[in-house]
Length: 466
Image (cartoon, rainbow, N blue to C red; front, side):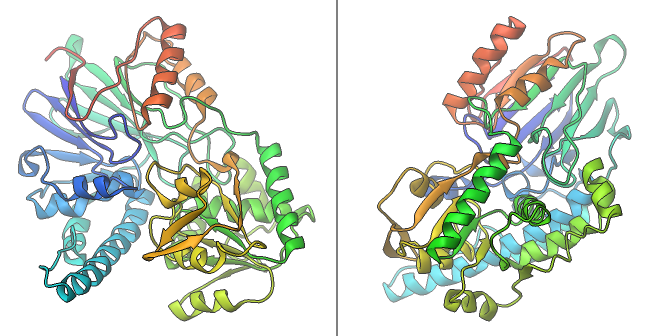
């Protein structure tokens, strides 16, 4: 039994792991790398394995860095099942169609530029047609049900508390005395996140592949986060500028709507106009509302008291490009939430172009900013950034509020690992920059007296007998 790490190995994005047990081959996630030109180059290269020889794909959740290359996988010859929770399947369909549209549009724009210079055309990494080919391969598996896709291979999903439908996957490979339990954490959410349940804990694993995005630091507590957020909003209201919040359309936007509603209920929200400028966020928020059975107890109680995430009088969703452009002419102070969360594309770039140079404007980052992204440049204090080919001066006030993260912080990760009381699992850390990963590895070694592996891209690690 072994696992090969084809992505998210000493980097945050690009989740892709090949699990092998005898002649069975299971791909866990097939995600897109994000943030840099090098990431795009890696997304375009051929897979380092033969997609046609895979027996199954298991998907942890719907974020693009976990599902984003599934259409390419199908186009390269994979025709088997893709197992995921029902909510993950619904979200993935939205995300992949949007991703294909963006890639087609980007390729078309790049081709026009290249043709004017006498250069050859470029092709999108995959197309809408490729997406339509992969969608029928999805097979729903509900939480907590044992499912056997292959002989001597069983898995069950547990709630990862990251986004709607996200799953920790527990594999049982082999039988009898040779059976080995492999747990794949996927992306773990923090305790007490808005809307959804906390990550489930497990007690037993022979091997564990675990995320480490925030392995070197904790998030600010909820109360302090909301107080800081409220303070920033009041400052922005006084200056009379817009508040631009880059946020991923899936998960983060819905969490922000919830927290804004929380401030509103307590009479602490200084803005009466909040615009969600993302068609995907509109569709996704509707999907969240139709899956309230996956919400945590606190949200369920609020719903029983009349709270409706999709029907708040101060929240407005834009529908068309014209609606989005009209926000740039808005004279009244407003909050504008738009994707993408790392400012690597999407409508938020238009709002940055129109607001970064304004001293009265505020840009609030509420999530992780990968190396090489425009968001990371702004967080690191850049005096100017390039947006749509134009260098824009940064005069707006830049804020970072890390308590809204949908990822577990360092203490959350350590506590989650502590629950493996039936043995000491062979631990492999993924989904982290090397400094955060190394910090978590050191802490786990101190607690469990066994050093976790930090696999490199392409490395194979054995975790049991065949």
